[in-house]
Image (cartoon, rainbow, N blue to C red; front, side, top):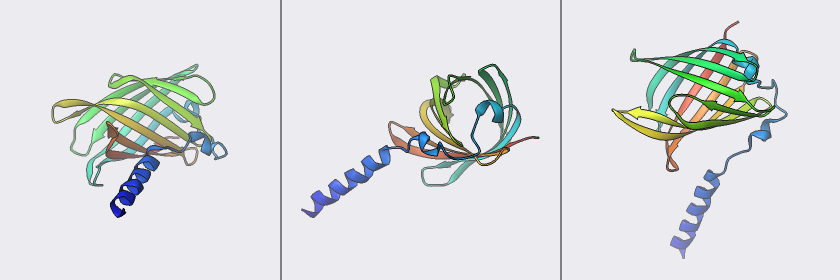
Length: 176
C-alpha cells in the first residue's frame, strides 16, 4: 500500500510541475512591458547558462541593437562569451495585438510565440542548439519581467522531450 501511495504522490508532483502560470496573472503589474518601447535602441544584457544540477556552464554579454518599423521589430543580438567566442542572432518580431507577438530567427525552428500582460512576457520557441559539434532542437520557455524603464530580468527553462536540461538567466539594461 505504501508503494502505491508513493507512486501516486510522485505522479501528482510530476503533473503539477507540467502546468504553468498564465501570463495574464501579471496584468495589473507595472510598469507595463511594451516590447516596441523597451526594445528600441541599444540594450545590454548579462547572462549565464546553468545545467540541470545548477552548475554555471557559460557566461556571456549580449549587445542588442533594436529598432521597429510599424509593428515589426528587429533585434540584432551580438553575444560575447566568457571564453572569448562570439555569436549573433537576429530576431524579427511582429506584434499582432496588445498582447501577442510572433518571432523568427535563423536558429529558431518555426516561429516563436509570445504573450505579454502587465510587466511580463512569456516567449516560447524551439532553438537549434549546437553542443559538441551536434545540433539539437531544444524547447525554450522564456519569462521576462520589466522591473523599471531600463531594467528587465529574464529566466528561460530549457527542455527536450519534457526533460529539464537547464536554465538561462539574463539581466537586461537599456542604455539612455
